[in-house]
Length: 436
Image (cartoon, rainbow, N blue to C red; front, top):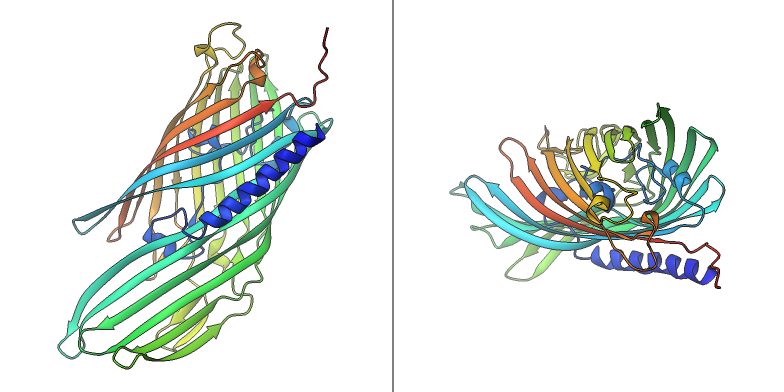
């Protein structure tokens, strides 16, 4: 048993290294990742990505629900869970009648869960936080003196978190939990401009590297509603704090004919910060067949000053008004015909659907960025073998499809089709086997 725990722990470490390496090229291809800390990652796992990402109130001992660490207390005493997922996506970018397609794939997460003692579960793993990845150019004609200007925008990087967490149920209806994560990563963004009437090229290069922590607290209350129904309430609180990072900005003026450059470097001490965040969710379960869940989350980005270069003062400083509070709504359902049926495979398959809506957390030229609308559907396919005759012991292959539209007036519209694949291993590692 100790060897298996050790292997599971190191599997998460290997996954963290893989995530760190993928961060070099990023899981994002969106030009909107040039704002803030990048495009915020979907924190859900395979089982609820088909449910629009809802899950703050969901409690199931056969699932690793990192959205609310209070859920860890539901894990069975004999069970060791391990869940890993990846995604493949194709995005269409459209602006002013021009359309461009892009595609990419990314390893998303790897998490594990087992019970330490009665009513106390322990979880560990690696989750994405945000992605930065884009490359595009824009040209415009100013006047006869300056001529036309061509600007090139590039960015890469991202942030990830390796976490451990625990969930404890002191009394039957109430559970508490926490996730404490090591948050790390970096980004590099550059803007280069060249005028047709001059040999000089001006570049701004923005960099930051983070090595900090991220703390999330959670609670859940589960209340039976008669013999057939059950209601759960979940809530989370994310601690906002400074990240201890010193973002820099290099202003480079390059003479293209002589290749002589003049560089000015700005640095902001402790210039990056995580916001305070809150979440509330409800989940209703009917006879273990149907679960309906709904979440509301709020991130207080608007209270944070973010680094920005001021063309008027020619300084790189912390500025207010670059970010704004983000709200996300999620609604989803999970239906399984009969999870206790002794023979029928079809009756153990999960069918899921959901939707979500999110406001932006950054501003573009003083206006709110694009809003995000998502629709999703998925299935959970049990993987059978002679060792997992009981339904609770079956590994599950979770597959979901998402359509995500990111849009705002007079800005680029993203339409993304994404396939999520997650595999949940459910093993009886702590059972005592009897051999006759």
